[in-house]
Amino acid sequence: QVQLVESGGGLVQAGGSLRLSCAASGTISSINDMAWFRQVPGKQRELVAAVSRGGATDYADSVKGRFTISRDNAKNTVYLQMSSLKPEDTAVYYCYAYVNVNVQYWGKGTLVTVSS
Image (cartoon, rainbow, N blue to C red; front, side, top):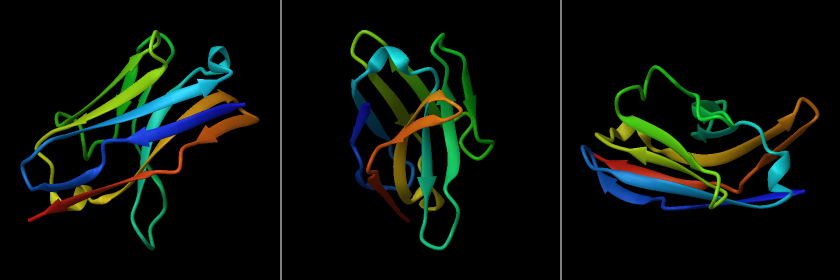
């Protein structure tokens, strides 16, 4: 089992920055990829950024150049540094851990609100 706890969400003005953290506990060694997703009411959850065990990253087009995902394997933590935030970035952000095709874990989410 893996537990994921997000932190760092909050209210920020457009153009500002926030850093989200996701602390993983439990069977950490089983985790391969980690990622951040986000969801707004009435819409599907969407991938924001992902990082592999080896550090390879991938981003949604909408956040490229503004968001940076990183992973500290020693601290079992994944981060999402968000800069130049826009009102359309407002969402609940979820941490995700992929073990294999049959086993994935989600955090409970943290709310990010960007005011215009």
